[in-house]
Image 1 (cartoon, chains in turn purple, yellow):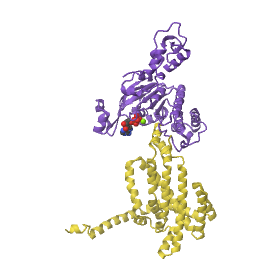
Image 2 (image 1 turned 90 degrees about the vertical axis):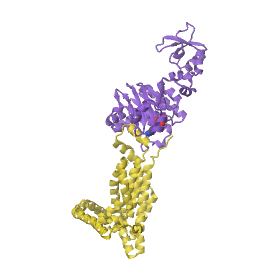
Image 3 (image 1 turned 120 degrees about the horizontal axis):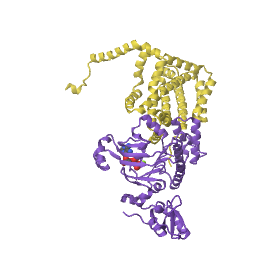
Image 4 (image 1 turned 180 degrees about the vertical axis):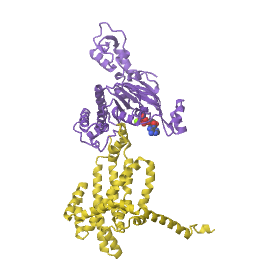
Length: 343
Length: 295
Ligand SMILES: Nc1ncnc2c1ncn2[C@@H]1O[C@H](COP(=O)(O)OP(=O)(O)O)[C@@H](O)[C@H]1O
Ligand SMILES: [Mg+2]
């Protein structure tokens, strides 16, 4: 399990030959459009502060062009920041020397790409050992570690296939195996599943969640898809025009959208799968009456199903240690599932 | 008014002094360094001679078998192997075997030297825009300047013989491999380069694990063009005393022997086709998995 989170502090990125010159103007409130029209520079990121928790999945969500790829590329410094810092294990990635950065990328991070970015001239196994090869791990060791991950992502038997002989979903499994073989604590995934068909996408999400259950890496997952964000994200940050406009758990965002832009975004969400029992329960247990006990971390959909099945209109709620801490009513549950937060 | 009708040229004496001055200093240069330069190329001369002798001395059936094997190894095409054997037999039957071996030796050695010089220059060009800006016009000059012009200083320095012929061929034939190495590396998919960066590849690792393998089909197209240009240059090289099919063509031109000219000319064409098809098919096989398919 990863022991350190990633701290992104006061990060700014201005694309263009003299990004530095405009940093004060941007800090003073110059907008992206203004910067572009007056000075021909593109505001990529503005004052980003995100604390990405260790061993959890941080989702960064936003529409195309909102700066998601730019942000994730600052974590392994594929893009140089104009100002600000990215702290990992109390070291600022942005201050690392070339060789420190190389070591950091080889051992601490691994990345999965939207367009897979596999080496077309190498087989599945050849791609999977790539990171280990760069680390200088000996051939046999690298091979056996790679085989383990190829098996884990469900590609056993395809070791000697070339990427262009595989479907998109399978190619991205190779991308995932290549990243996991590195044994890095940080996994960076830039719209890793966006290019895949919906069914295969859900499949890959399950594979990822499954692996994460066991490995507890610090995963940064980029997506423009809210369902994907809510399913995967322990925490979610929403970007617009290079700025974070809201961050928190999926439930927090769905319950309390920061503005109408986000409210619009979450309109279609299945709230029953996002809001937990804890959010709507009363602190007073129902004496004797309730036949069923739900966990406070259960989602409303589960709770409603359980009550309907038991033909009850209410239920008691317990915490992780099975202690009864409150109760909910079916009516409130259904209400919370169908009413969107107003804005 | 005369300025308008007559071009303001140098006076005859000025021009003569100007040319004389340059010629003179070049001659001084040769006087001072000519022998050194000649000695520098001695090993090359010995190698080329040795290689020629080897090809000529090898009994023709063995030579034919080796050629057929190489063609098969490169192309994996029985048709091409058969075509090669037939053309070589005809060449031999018409009494051109030895000349063909001379030409083959020169072309092979020239190509190897072009590869050894050209690929590193191409790699450097791909890494530096400034270096590219310097080298590109030089390559343009090398490809467009009439060969006879640079034959003059070569002959002045090295006289007549195999090495000057070889150098003339190399000057003419090296540009494509330089250009295509540079181009091939520059065309490598940036997504894949980014992946290599993300996994912590050093510039050297990136060159050998990503850029060179993915540029290989282009580099190979360069090798192919280099071979073709080297063969095309064989006749000109014979002006410098290189023996082989080219020299026979030259003789035929001088004495107006149509048949001799066409026979040797077509022999060069046959060898060119064999080289071309073999290297193209080999290039295709290199490319087999290189195209990226998404989704
Ligand atoms: N190298 C660059 N030069 C100039 N502008 C860029 C560059 N890379 C990205 N941008 C701009 O930065 C903004 C954010 O891009 P990106 O991070 O790719 O968005 P996303 O991944 O969310 O779609 C866009 O407006 C894009 O045009
Ligand atoms: Mg993107």
